[in-house]
Image 1 (cartoon, rainbow, N blue to C red):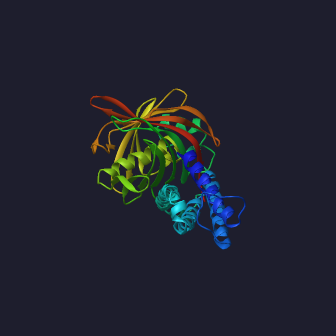
Image 2 (cartoon, rainbow, N blue to C red):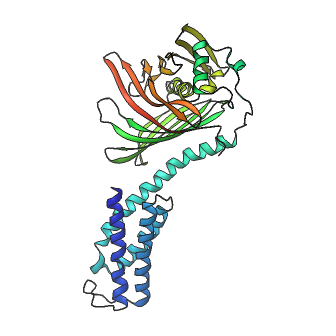
Image 3 (cartoon, one colour):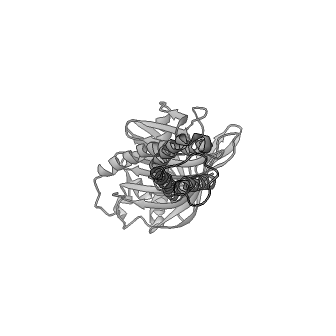
Length: 360
């Protein structure tokens, strides 16, 4: 679709040069029966240049391409009206380009709500200039201590926020997989998770924004950033997003597991139960480790399936531990619902990058 739109814009733009050629009588232009003045010919040429620049911005994925596209369409359509009998079919191309421009602007506005929240959260960050040491680990079960040592968190700065970039696949029950990319920020001192996803569902751009703070949680998913597919702020969503926030800490920010809001219970040498309390909402999960000290699974019964708005056992088995910016972390994981009729894998996540204590 991107290639088709780019080709349409460039061809449509180049066709405008015909108006310029007609005005300056560079050869016989039979396509235009009406005479075109030289000043109008200049406008036809400028319109062609604008569409070429718009196409370049679109191909390079620059945010400004859609605004330039609006200017291009307005000028182009004004010229088409002056030579309607000869150029009227150019309106079809302008209509298609205008739709793409509107969708792009809506995408920018929707994503802008996410970036605005991220900017505000980053500005409110108070850096913690402390190093995680062995004494900090003493209240934790031995299997969790071993995990933090394995990932390399000891001797490094304590974590107060993180940024994660994922790519992967997701699906709903009874539907096909779709590919996605996502970016998220997690803030620990005052728990917050801002997650923005870009995907194509049935070939159509679909964006999703999950926002979790101390006070609220909501989930918005929009088709073409115009039509709401999901818009939830139900009471059940808060414990669900609390589980997700805590899951992120366990898998990708193990240094944050010394948080005072977490209470621990040792189950055996390779598992422990954790209870996380945020603003009066308590959720729990069992963490399973292997002999190396790697966290291999996270299981909770406190997460609600959005489609049913009912709690089911939920797990996130992880693997493929690799060095990510100085930490040994899992780089592949799955999201699994354990329904009465059987397991359902709804998500496959691959880590692209993780950064800690981000300031901008």
